[in-house]
Length: 339
Image (tube, rainbow, N blue to C red; front, side, top):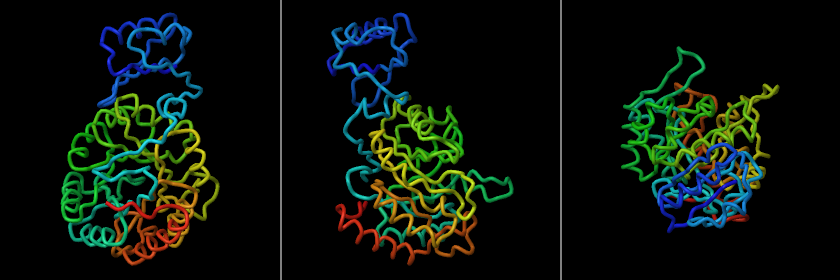
């Protein structure tokens, strides 16, 4: 059960509803989103809807049929649009997020950022904190990488998305970035999810490499319940028996999510493919499947990239991809969503 309070509801009204809805069952969770009336989530209600919906201050009571109450379509039938530094994700156009897997230097990032900004990117990506399988691999430049990303935002005008690895990193990442990314290895780091739920920045939540759709949506629920309604889901491939690609890109999840959740969904074909020649076809397929955006790794000199070199497109490759996407979308939608 979800109880939506009215804009005129008082704190006394809210306390009364909490007491009534919690009788005989778990205590309701009060969710406060900026600029909106409070919402109560009652995971296992022991009272009937009619015992709550006529209480003072209650706008409506919703019976949720899924465990991800706030992320589900029962709660919100219309699709959510997420505003990232003035760039809208989920508004009907295709958002293209592009940049290097890892920020390596000012020169490297500038070459990529300038190129993608001129050829169709709406947002800039780049890792400052890198979760690597090997402890000996490049771990990122840390705060210096964040500063370089913010510098390129000033130069190119592109909003920035980058990853946070630990709860204690969230505030500094949110200081420099327009959107905080939760990577596949952190999807079920619940303290981190709660921290980004409180950070005031939109969140890009990547699917865990072994996560089901329900587990992924429940991870999003952590962010929503912590007070942040601005969540974008990112499919980046799941681990299967197949070894010809780095991961198996589950494009069928796009229409599945469109039915189950109101949150925008984008696709990262780069990390799924692991091979540059696979990226453009999978990005086109993601757009055709109805994704709200794609995230593409781009590097000016992929052979020298310090992170995921095999999957990076060059700036000319990226320009060809965005031209192809634009032609595809001209027949199906309204073109690219530029910054």
